[in-house]
Image 1 (cartoon, one colour):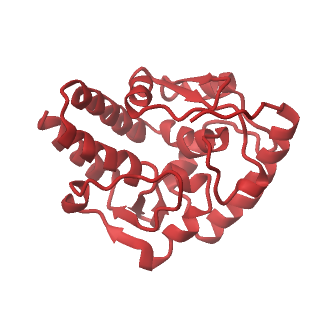
Image 2: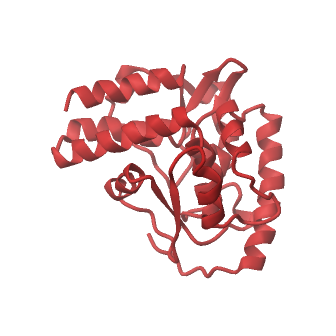
Amino acid sequence: MKSNRTFDPTVDDQHWQTLFETHFQNMQSLNAISTLWISGFSKLGIDNSKRPLAEDLTKAIQPYEPYTFIQTSQNIILEQIDWYRHIANYEMPLTSFVRTPEELDYCDEPDIWHDIMGHIPFLAEKAYSEMYQLLAKTYIQAYESQRSDLLSELGFIGGMLIELGLINEHAGLKAFGATFYSSTEVVEAFKPENQLVFTKEALQSGESYDRHSFQGKYYIFDSMEQLVDVINDINQRL
């Protein structure tokens, strides 16, 4: 999906500040912010008043994890295989606009607010980065082996957990999914009636992530170790 939006640094900086101030008030009121995310975010030196630049984020993260962030000129949702090939090479492409404040609840285009706030703080954490490298490399192997059964399970992990998962931390239930750090869908996820426990049956259900609307149900898992074990199990079936 491509966009005709143009990059305006001044306007994007204004929108970045507004989004940061309003969205993270929601996150804090829900007590939803993961300690993993907080730890990663603290390493990046992000100025809340302006959109960070790809080269500055690369410089900030590389003492911890060797990612390079690539600023693109287009807004496009990559195919999963292309995304994971970038990740496996410790690369992450960034889209080129910040959504407007009116699009805080939902933005039907890939934007840099989600790219940066949803993914990069987690990638700065070694345990998360190692898990994500394992997921990327396992996906590539499954794709090249034409294992549609395993790709379905990996697709569930990438959508329903990496984008929309909830994790039990020592401090309580927290937002793990990257989508929650850029969208008011986090409010829906913290309604008990929308929460489900992650199970093997769910993994094998074939359920996929609908990026065009709120999902309406959100899976809880217990730890990063549990997630790594699930991915390793898929890897061993290749």
